[in-house]
Length: 115
Image (cartoon, rainbow, N blue to C red; front, side):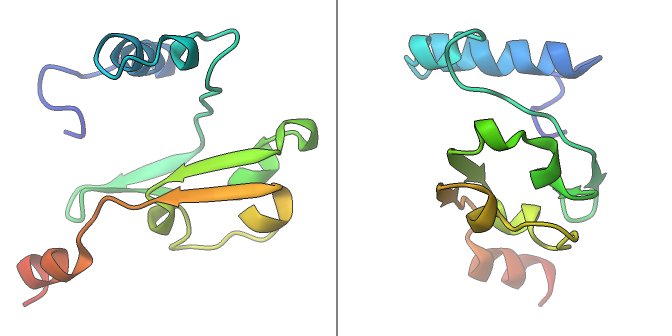
């Protein structure tokens, strides 16, 4: 549902390959798409909420990231990652720099779903 009917993944490896191919071929981010030297993609335990069309983290995601890798963190849709705060260090405690990218127009979203 998130990627459309043409993109259903059997496992995390297939999903990561799709993301890296898109980064390289569509976004012109070849260096960042390289699995060895580019962006590090980490999957975390989560559940998909069909009615809200949102993914909600299950547990402390910061604990999955080794301290030596915790320099810069780019959170896509950070509000979804923080609806339910797990015990443990927060993002700004764990990382030196944290950037959040929001895509949802919540005023429009609320008007369409909860009016």
